[in-house]
Image (cartoon, rainbow over all chains, first blue to last red; front, side, top):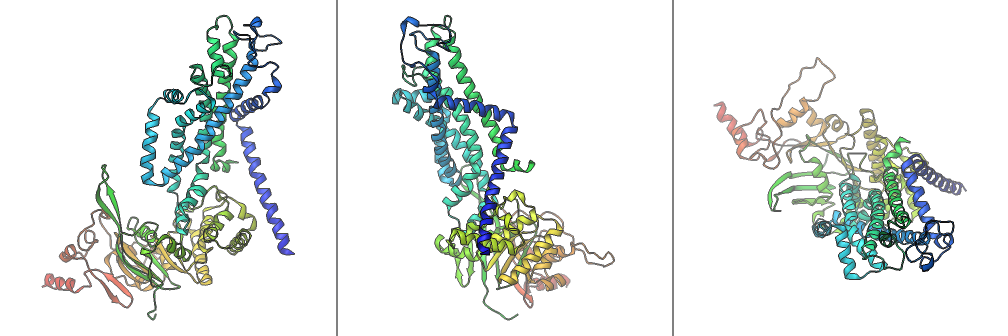
Amino acid sequence: MEAAIEKTNKAQLQKEMKKQQRKLMLKRLLRSRMALTGFIILIVATIITFAAPLITSHDPLQVDPVNRLQAPSADHYFGTDDVGRDVFSRVVYGIQESMFVGLAVAFVTAILGIIFGLYSAYYNTLDHIIMRINDGLMAFPSILLAIAIMAALGPKTVNVIIALSVVYTPLIARVVRSSALVIKEQTYIEAMKSMGGSSNRIIWRHIAPNTLSPLLVQATFVFAMAIINEAMLSFLGAGIPAPEPSLGNILYDGKNVITKAWWMTLFPGLAVILITLGLNMFGDGMRDILDPHSNKSN
Amino acid sequence: MEKKEPLLQVTNLKKHFPIKNSFGFTKNHVKAVDGISFELYEGETFCLVGESGCGKSTAGRTILRLTEPTEGEVIYEGKNIVDYNPKEMLNIRKKMQMMFQDPFSSLNPRKRIGTILEEPLDIHGIGKPKERTDIVMDLLNRLGFQADQYYRYPYEFSGGQRQRIGLARALIMNPDLIICDEPVSALDVSIQSQILNLLREIQDEFNLTYLFISHDLSVVRHIGDRIGVMYLGKIVETGPTDQIFQDPKHPYTKALLSAIPSPNPHRKRERIELNGEIPSPIDPPTGCAFHTRCPFAMDICKKETPKNLEVESEQFVACHLYTEEGAKEKEMTNA
């Protein structure tokens, strides 16, 4: 009987504690104005991504030569392009494409980066091999490397993700490695060894969680850079293939008629700027929020 | 004390860290631990004392094979654990635990106290998760914690509390031997005594043997049964605590003890002051490592390493003042 009561108490306590933690996180997110702004921009971008068919009334691929290069109006919010496609729909689907590519790249690089980073920090010999390959990849200008990979693989959305992942994995691996190197020397890691914890347990259960906040911050930045670079690749024609809308190739189509149709470059340009800005602000804010030591000040 | 089998016997243990030049070739060695030997008997507290950098912490870590020994034997319950493979070592680690100096970096900041304490049980596959929680709760209770502190994070605790958590982590496996690496040197004096008294209480209750590493002689006097004085990677004197405090034999021990402030200002004491710095462990002095700073140094001290001699019962000293060769030279200079 008593034991049962104790057990429910324990469960309640635990729930209470977790609730408190979550409240604290949210509080700090709300307090930081920058992080909040970034967060709101991201939420809007996410909504646009998922609700793309609902908020657009035109097919982004529908050509309508009669109504080409029309200025923004009630029917075409962002006007039409040089073959009469609705720019608003194209921008919305472009955002969808960009968000997808950015998120996929951030995800893939985070996973690969944490694996390479942790193992190279933990094992000395592996470190030399992985980090030299890393140095090699980082020595290339990122856009050049991406173009080279795209040229080899051919223009396709999946290939954009692969190319950008190759470009940005070294960046994350570096960040993870450097913070893992610090954590590796902490006494609690030695304590784990003294208790007989295996290397994999130490790496994944003790070092990995402590590298998570720099990793997340870096991953948001990679997310932002992937969006810019995807736009850049598509602008150069090495990214997402032509009829498919992407922020980069809308800009490309717009540059020929920039004097006649400013709306074709302004809106996709703004979208790229706002999303990257939002991601960067959010990433900066996250850095402060995720630090366990900043809990003390509250 | 009658002679019984030691629980842990360390023989000629050495740990040399290589120094590499920029091409990766070994240039030299830091002789952090340079051939120490001592025994630990069940239920006692053996203290290793010495100034910082003398290799006492490295000795503790090498015994647990957190760093691999360069040479020597660590015999635990009659078996040399230096040759053990990782699997065999895992079993030994259940019985030998370690308590660390820094209460702030010894607990993972992202884990709850309960999780930290359950981890050793998880590693050794003891109990189901629920049983583990109960074991941990019991132990926390025993060490004076509240039930809700099980769910707290390390940053919510003070240094003394964290040190108690560190002790709990060492105790959870119900070990025979705990290596305490300066467990109180990072704490306030009032908290120090609290932890030391707790260590003593626990010692009786759990039938523990301590290898206590410290630089603080007053702490050592309080807790130690026997002490070993280390200088530059070597043990220069071992013996029962009271005996050494009353009648130190080695000049280095004398110097250390004479540096303890006395509460009675009128008491006259023989003061031995040491000049100079502790020599580099990369290139330790020949012969007796202490001869560069020893006020009684003779010629032979520079040439020959003194043997460890039992000068009084249970009190071993490695110094030429007590060896035959040293006595000969003394006679010669006097004559």
